[in-house]
Image (cartoon, rainbow, N blue to C red):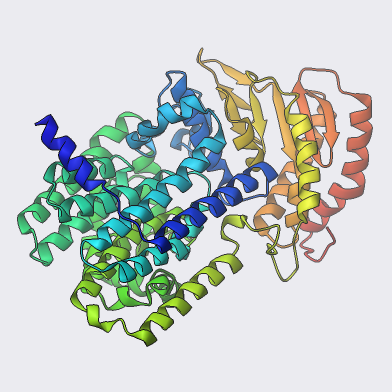
Length: 559
């Protein structure tokens, strides 16, 4: 039995390459790794950088035997958000997202315990997904066509954008799904089961992707019984997981996520996945409205997926069948980020688009003439162009302005000058000290047990006691640069700057240092006189006028 399995594994992973795929995979890995690592160390503000801190703390806690615990994740939990409770260091994130597949990478993190390890891992998994896609395409297509499809993967905004986000669990989905399909094509049923299981353990909602696989196998009549079994397993797993297992850890799935994401389909302050499903089935008018509106954003989202594949998925029945349920889930979500092509959710749509394209070309191999090949190359070029100009997750802020009108762009040299100041303050915080930090500083300080996001100052420690954090570090300079164009930064500046001034004035926290708009305070310590003088000047000359102007509704003030 063992010999048979090893033989199947060798056959499955006997990789085949074309020159174009090898070059594309290499460039994808190198360029995106450099950009992602650079953004991390340069501390350019980025979408959901708080999540990078959450995942790093999860892995750091995991290396210390505290599997899936996170004080940062606790700050987003139902007791904290809705009930006003304090974050807890022993909070288990499995109540928010059930992600046991992350344990696969814990040994790697143990060897290289750093947030950068997770960033490199993310790009590596997506690079390998492209390589696996080529093996899958070669099951049906000749090398030139298989190469073009793989180039589409590496040029896709739906792949590059989420790749340049902070580390996230969905980065595993393309690799697992392409591997699952390859096992199916090579009739390795054990492998199909293994990767189906791995896919389910990525997240609680990854079962929607697997359900789409089963739905396709049924409607295409390729393997109807396998498809029915896949649908039954994925649906049963999601229902048991979200209604029985996850509630054992917390109430987040029923009191937060179902309400926040599917509010039009449920009533009250609490709902289960069964309630949401029933609401969808009994609200056909609302369902149709959500599926087609907003028309412009929905069409733009689909076009971004279709462009690197020369729009073939739009006419591929297989692509529509594979993505019917994953798209349904995104379209009906009451969430502005659901249809954002640069956000991680886009990766759940990618496998169906590409496999559906492979199947379409296998039925129409003669369609690839010179004109279509040229058109495809133009599409690939446009896909990269639109991705770069969109500055995905602000990874290209050093060359692409964050805002055109008004123009906001921090030069690379100035950003790195600020980084040195911020790091000089962070280095004064002991590794085992409790910390409250602003969002984009959190990932750099998250390898510790007790950390929360400013302006919160208290948490529950391992002794179940309420404590005040020992250190507070706040970067107000970053908010200054971006508040003129972005409402979120403006609101944070208006909230945080007076809060810091209040802490300085009431002497509960002693002001340790101020450098380039970064403020470091320590609980119950004497303030540094020079730091107080610097803060007074900074507050009166720069921050207070901005806060007052923002509060009075003025928007055209200078940075």
